[in-house]
Amino acid sequence: MRRDVFQAIADPVRRDIIELLAEEILSVNSIAEKFEISRPAISKHLKILKECEIIDYKKEGRERFCFIKPKNLIPAFMWIEQYRELWEDKLNSFDRYLNKLQSKTNQNE
Image 1 (cartoon, one colour):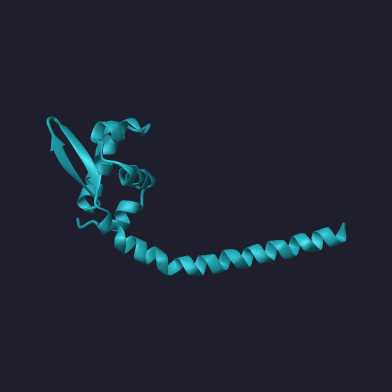
Image 2 (cartoon, rainbow, N blue to C red):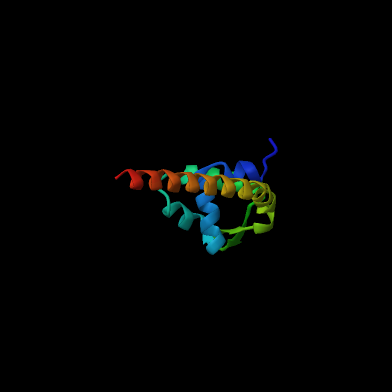
């Protein structure tokens, strides 16, 4: 099955792994220690991230270290950016509505 960046970011654990690896290169064991799920579950998430070409491994001795390939996240960022302005407008409109309601409540007191 062909995987893509959207499958990579669809799961909250994978998003957390991406966030960790954006800060530093970590061993598979170091990543697993940061989560309260099983090591095999972390390995499965890492496998999906690798298949989506979001991360890669480098081997040092007997340990595998994971690092992020941020360039491959660009399609997701571009897609999200399309909707940022729309959501900002909606949130600003909602904020104005709440302020209007609060003003009416304050006037009635």
